[in-house]
Image (tube, rainbow, N blue to C red; front, side, top):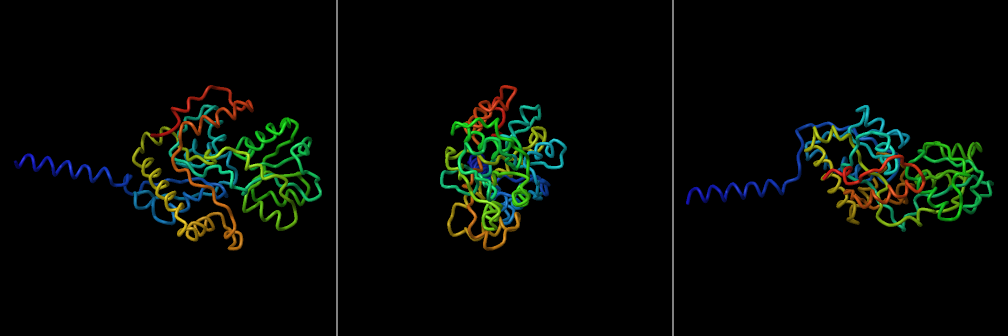
Length: 314
């Protein structure tokens, strides 16, 4: 009887432990790289609401001006986890970097009009065909906005190879339009709203509404080697982002979510109140990544055959 009671007590304790959130070794430090878009809202909320700390993670959020530079920062250990767009991540893997996905950021939604093609005042750009021969700035060659805008042009019967794309970080967009250095930019809020409010440009297309629902806009990547050495930290990070995503989906928390976003991407109150927030997608699926692989193959962006089943940390 005593042995049976001891066994039952042990099983109960094990069950209770399994239900607890993953906890990394106390004080595990992670430098996380983000760019100035609301797709990182679940990370900002996790930091401000203490979801990382309660799992033993010491997460420092580091602003990265260009999304396309995040994989190199991961490779050099300047970052332990970072948020490249899916296309930037896949190009890095295609180029030989051994990166994997720990979690996800925002998702596409046909209700989102927080990014689009913003043309310079007086440029005359109104249709996809008007982009031919024009110079258009994108916040990262090969990143989300670049790839999806090219897909949009192709869908509209325009050869995107006849458009001159140049790399320009979000904060530069307004000045480049005012100075006439570019004819248009593919931008996102809050920068898009600031441009239109100032009169420097106008939205020629909310092309984002043509994208399919529920596809990752940002993925949270790390070196495979780091994940193998820190499996508890990787799991704890993902669980913290999942808890953050659940918090974001409760309407009563909207003000706190916006406050967290404002802290990290420095939005003034009037902009913060209006900015659209991407739906959270903390768990990345192989199906989501397969969509991006096919899209990039269509644009001849990949040189190798990528096995998506090897990219998502379970």
